[in-house]
Image (cartoon, rainbow, N blue to C red; front, side, top):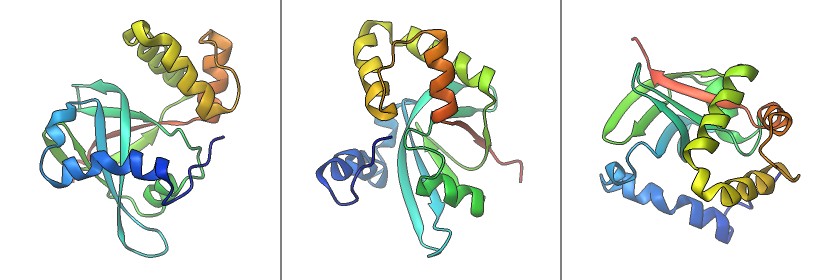
Length: 160
């Protein structure tokens, strides 16, 4: 699993779009990216994480993201410890609840993601390979292994 050093060049590169959201320009990304605002489980400070939406469902609405850095990454541990995260996707902003997708549903989401991005399939497979640490080919066995290693989470507006 890839580890990105905080305050390293990749960290700054991945954080750059957060400023667009801060300036009220998050709508430029449409429903392709979402900004997750959560509370640090130890510090109590507000944190922001930018995530790629692998599937957006109008019904709900529900935005599904892949947790590319594993179940022990800070943002996942934070939202599990202190629910009530906020989501900004496109021009929508809401307090959200989250759920972890089951293996079969997650595999279907990844398959649909690959189908929607078929013209850049080599780039998608290379990205998955980089995140996973092994060669991803895009077959059913690889998808199953991927969703076991990289959990998919869905965010939808809280009913409260």
